[in-house]
Structure formats: C-alpha cells, structure tokens
Amino acid sequence: MLKTHPHAATRLSCARMPAGPPGAYTAPDRPGTEGKQVPLLKTLSHPDYNFALNDYDLALVFLKTCAASVAPAARPVQLATRDDLAAYGSGSTWLFSGWGSTSSGADNVGIGGASATVLQYGLGKYVSPGACQARYAPEPINGSTMICAQGLAAVNGAVPNQDTCLGDSGGPLTFNVGSPADPLAGDPSNDRLVGITSFGPAGCGQEASPGVYTSIPYWHDWITAQVDTVKKPCGPSPTLAFVQESSSASWYAKPSRSAKLKAGQGLPECQALCNKYAAGSKGCAALGMSVNVGKKSNTTYCDVYYKWVPQRLCAAAADAKKFKCGRPSLGSWRSRWVYT
Image: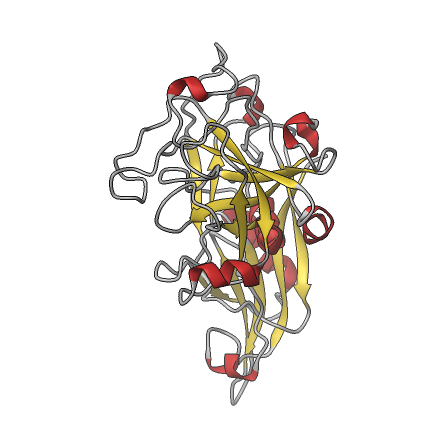
C-alpha cells in the first residue's frame, strides 16, 4: 500500500476469493489497467516500529509523479478519520485487496499457496479490540494503533472465509461512506482508507480469525503532518509555511541539526534555515527553538528536523532528561507546503 502525496491507493474492479482457482474471479482483469513502475522520491518508516509486537507498522512512500499520471484508473483515496470510524465502523462492510496468496499453502500460513495474477479483493466486517485480543492471546493487540476485521463467508467454499493472506501486507482496507453496506456499489470518491494490512493468524480464510491492520484513523494526524512537508510532484509552485504546535514545549526527538543563533536572531532566522534545507535534498519537516541557560549568558538554538515531523512534544516530567526537553522552549513548529 503506497502512502504518498497524492495518496496512491487505487480502487480497481478485480476480485478476490481466497483459495479459489483462476476462474473464481468475479470480474476479469481489464486491458490497459496493468501496473506501472513509478520512481520513488523517498520512503519514511515509522521511527517507533516494533517488529516483535508488529506495532507502529506504518511506512509512507512518496512518488516522483502524480497518481493521475500512473494510470487512468488510479485515484487517490481519502484517509479515514476517527469520526469516520465511529460512524461507519461496526455497521459497514469493509473491502481489502492485494496480490497475495490465494490459498493457505502447504505450511498453513500462505507460503507455497497459489499466487494472484490480477488484483484480488475480499469483504469483511469490523471486529472489536476485545474480541480480536481474545483470538490472539497471549500476543498483545494494541486497540489504538491496530484495527481488526473478519472476512465474510467465501463465495466458492474452498475456505470458510474471505481473507488477506501472505503477500497482502501493506495493502488497503477501506469502507465507503456513501454506500456503507456495499462498498463495491459506492462512488470511489466516498472510499476511505481505514487500515493497512499488517498480520494475521496461522492459516488464511479461517472462521473467527480476524486479520489485523494498522489503524489509519489513529495515525491520521501524523500521516497528514508528514505529507504536508513534502512537495507535491504536480501542481503550482508552493511556499513553505510553518504551523505552530506549541509555544512552550520542544519536540521529543533528536534534532537533525542544532544551530546556535547570534544575538538578536530568532524565529525569522530559524525559519530561513528550515527553508534552506527544504529547498535542498535534506528537507525540513519541523523546527524548534530552545534556550541553553548559561552562567554568564543564555544561548538560543534553532533545532531542525530533516526527514519527519516528530511524533510528539516533550510533556511528562520524565522527558526532561531526554533530547532538548530539559531546556526552556521558545516554541515548536512543523513545516507545511502551501499551494496557491
């Protein structure tokens, strides 16, 4: 699943029926809709990704070209918000898709299963964090950063349920706010990306075995902040603006560069430094100003963050000994490209 600006999630009329033979597709592959290789501008993995727990399982991929130029059928999908999830979560039908295995495979986790030759899809329903945790215990399910969905009954009966499988990781999980009961009948402009395929139990397409997805509503603001810092590959020339996140707290992260400001210098000079890096290959996602209190005089620093907007600000008392949290802060900002 590509997370980019524009967001390159596409809604294609291909079918997935797990464990089914090639003839089980409900719609044939359409000529002219084959995939296209697109050069990448950069990738950004979540800095707190935890392999052991499969948590913070999120990466953003930025393209060098517009989604519209990739293929006529390619359309960006909107990110689901917390309000969207509250309104359309438990009562709607969700759609997942991918090119993963279409059978459980000899080892019952998908390895050795049949590979898809065209994009497949399946339908499912939301599963509460409690019910999902009961299935995966003792492995922890983070009810905030993760979201679970159980596939509907399979059409061909080869396995009990429709499901994602090995090779589908990173693919989209969506619902349609205009047609909650039938996402296939809804206008694609009403699709909302609610999850990214992350992991599942041993065996694909089994009953009472929900798949686990990275929760987009939880990460909505973080994703939006990161996307704002990267120029669109198309459209008018933008200018770099700065959104203040705090007037009194520093970013909870190690700065990419910390520059000492001269006497009389302040925010304009710090923003100018960020602009300089943003125009080059390093980039500038965020900045902050902090004061190092000295015996004879105080020194003001401009702290610049190249690649991403830090996940949070310094807050708890325990943060004081980490990064620049112990210094008095003059404010923290994130950068945002503005198009006119």
